[in-house]
Image (cartoon, rainbow, N blue to C red):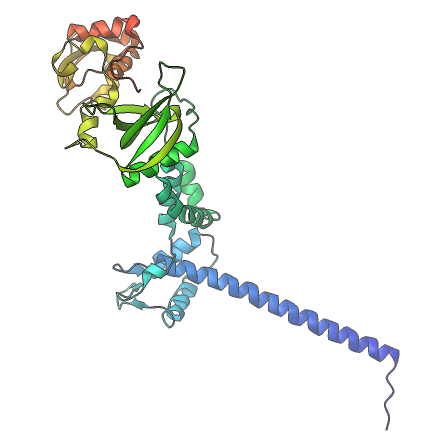
Length: 373
């Protein structure tokens, strides 16, 4: 018997075929999305594990919830059991159960980052990139990017990063423009301990001068970044400060930089060298380093110093007239003078007398013996 197909039958068959294909495609897309979501979730599970420390399943579950995964604790447990068949991870018999990477796990091949690490990298990028050399920044940029993506949909972004800031204690200033090529070359030379040839415009000059420098250290003071260096044309090898924004150009040399013998950056800073010396203190022994001083404040003005000390040996006395006397040992610098002027009439007196004269002497307002070159 011959069966004759009508046009209606053909249309029905075509519609059925089209419907089946659409359903198959939808099923395929669903599986793809489901598979991608599972992969992303399981990667997050692996990123929570450590090598030498057991991590509980509840902790992993809580971290994934913070990262935006809508899952159950049971799903995390199933993931861990499934992952243990393909990755070198192990569990203990404790209650609650803990997981970790096995001692022989090749962790160096896993680009893992948990939320705590992502927060740390995010804060490093926000606050320390100005002080890191290019050779290190180049290696960190992928991690900064990974941290941003890790935190993009995380509740941690709102519960911590959006609630933490660093505010300057002084009037905020806009950082001066720094020639990026000069900065990168200086940091490179400092990192590899090489000399540089630099065109630098000193603060009291209008034209740049050329120097060959031995980079020693980088210091950020407020919004200004300084290079500590010695000049090769200086037989005394005096350590000088150079503001990075005054470099016009920097060329890296092949010759090794010479650092003064026994130089220690912490010792240099503790001596008050970056506070810049004041001309009135030049007649004092060692230009006023480690000098015992006595300050008298109104009670309100001196209140902050009862909580934040000037030095470990500070002693505060409340006087009968409701004023405060503070005895302490500090380096006499221009920075100290500027800081004391900020108290205005709240500072009633200061000893030695030379210190109080410097505070009251506005003619020496901008004078220092050790200004940046």
